[in-house]
Length: 343
Ligand code: MRU
Image 1 (cartoon, rainbow, N blue to C red):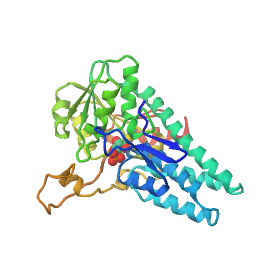
Image 2: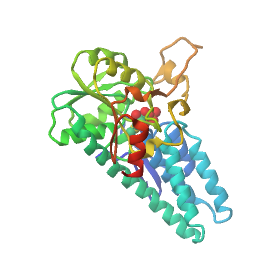
Image 3: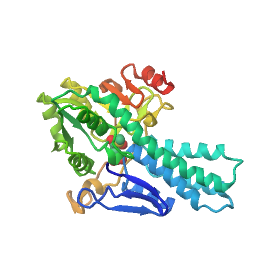
Image 4: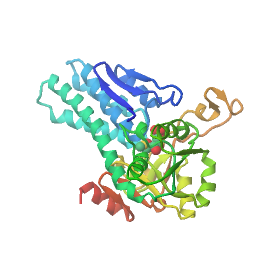
């Protein structure tokens, strides 16, 4: 299985996703500042992977923080990591989990606190892989046999600690013996679809066809696509879904053509503190991601640019949300809450 990131004695190692698919190289983040930079620069990306990296960043920072004013430093570490990317709620979820653990160990010696934080970050990593397999098991029965699955961006092993959410559903369907192939949207401007999704599905021997984003409507109309499966960066309490820019258009086109639109995500992507998608902060990325490709300009100098990295798909376009505890359908507010509460 592709290893996205790992904890080592020297720091946090992660595969450099800005260099894939041509260069398969691990970079070592030696301190929490380097972890924060790796998240911001998208060396590591994808909501669950960001959450795991953040937890590891907190553990690394705590391991290196001096005894004097430990809690002041701990807060700075958490704040620095939290300031990297605003949309994927898993980032804040990972940091909060580490903060809660620190608070619960208030009476323990700092050596114990550091050890426990490291163990917790490793647990977050392990749990994420297990959660993705559960998402896969719940999602596989929804994938029609003998059809094509359309996906957008990369919600695969690379976007998680391993196995993937949307690609986990595809992997589980293939493992269950279904005959399916995949259409991958290239996902402008960062090309997570062409660079990452195609790369990892090819490694698994899953038949994958790359299309540009503007071809999705054509193929959804053709009758070839059996369902769409995507990941999520934040899901509001009512089931509105923030995911990679372009997802909304795919969802509307899927509805227009009666193709089921599934969202696969762990419950750590659910943000019950916000009632709907209008409350989700949308990250704006640098203009150069749009005006240049691999350093080559593709627009006149001085071109005005907007570059929102995510969009919000209203819940009415979502057929179901596949989580590790089961599948939620409309009415989402009720069904998502039931999954969270475990009943
Ligand atoms: O900007 P990115 O590459 O971090 O965006 C990733 C996505 O939008 C994914 O679809 C989402 O995080 C789910 S990953 C399992």
